[in-house]
Image 1: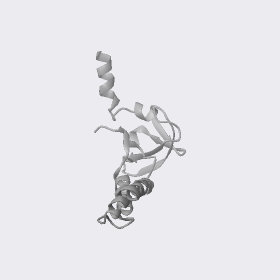
Image 2: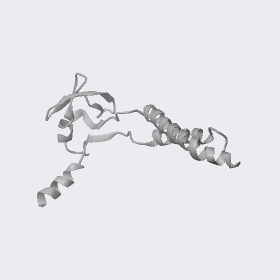
Image 3: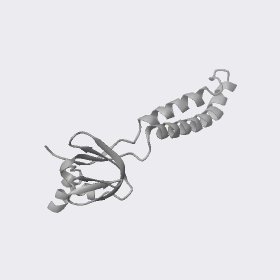
Image 4: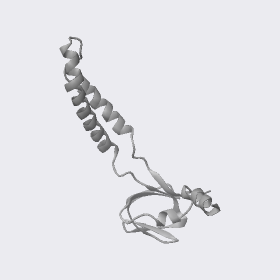
Length: 139
């Protein structure tokens, strides 16, 4: 039981270099160095003393933070969200919107589709992504 609690406490601990060693070759990562310069690229490998990204080796003592970059950028998420919103809005507009227009008090054709597309784009832009810290040196 105590071992499970200890594992749970260290699972979210970003001060452990072991998180860097668990990255997979090809993962998109970024590194903030002690001089605040950034290196971003694909993870190659890591040892107890260094990390290699796109063939560039950085020693552990120069690394302040290692983070994993999101798989999809904000533009891609926005486009996907807009597409889903337009599709859902088209279905609602073609069914419920048409019913309301037949009754004489519905919105103009396409209005629901357009609003749903805009809402989907907003949700897509605000969703997911984000950088996940893998390692951060403690002061």
